[in-house]
Length: 451
Image (cartoon, rainbow, N blue to C red):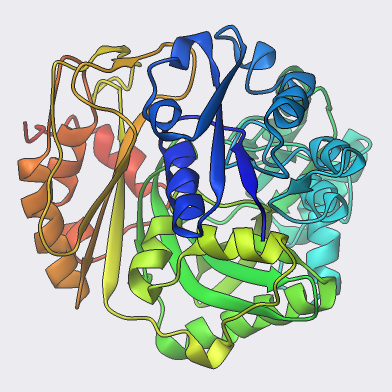
């Protein structure tokens, strides 16, 4: 086992990793920018090192500074959390060159799944169902028009190196497609430094279903059930739950074994998530995330398995300690991402938290690193924390969520809490009748927010 883990991240995920390390008896090192000097993970870590000024490129993305912090403190492993350097294959390689363990998959798997075109090719070769579309990058308009005619409109143009909805354009006809290609290439180049694009069939009302997997790189891999992340705004997840209200046990087991078998064949090591669009009883692979997800607590609540703990043990060389038959899906869990944003306009709302009262009680979990008097900096994402609830049934979880939201008080900044208080009382959300476009349509109706 490792002696000391450096946490190359900030906010709630840094605190989450710190807690897992402490429970394993491992010393921790927090790194921080000058904007995060008062952060909770900095206060609770055994050691802390300032790695630069507020801009992420000068701190949390500063690989030489992070490696130097490892050498200064004697850290023998790095947990990257999510975002920042978590899916940077070169970072994993540099750590290996310095004989520092990267708590995540092999660099080759990060690189493979980071390229959406290669990821799709790999998924198809491993027997994972994919959305019909181009076999690789689109090289010219005529090729795109031919493929679109074959698979049928509407189609969606995507950036090969993309994510978060950037470089994605829907085309419902030939004229739309020509414009979509040009726009997507410009956006992809600006956002990712790579203008490679590919084409897929556009599904009108799919759900976003993702499968949580764990592999040990030694031939074993399992799935931990699915999460439904269909409540999204501009391709950003807002609300996640598990199990999905759209799937039954047979569907879950079939797609779960498909992805677990694929990960065994790939020799995957660590935690990962296979993401699908799901429509009319069929699954279509869209991407794989080679890291812990923001929404991993949903799975932890319904399985009782500590995913971050497993990540650390796998990276230290331990074989997978859980067999598929040991995994049980118990009850239902829902997560709300509470952001420092206006609940109507979604404008960021950095500033000082003047009062903070998180909810409690049976089946309620709050993953947050903020506290009363803490200042939300304007330099990073706006996540204040995550409210996760668990119940024996989905109905019980919904009622528990309603109660917990009513208890949750954050003053001094705008948050998305009023949005969730509104959603949890909506009949369609209560009945699980939504798809990836539902929330944006709902927001256009200018609903009254539950304060």
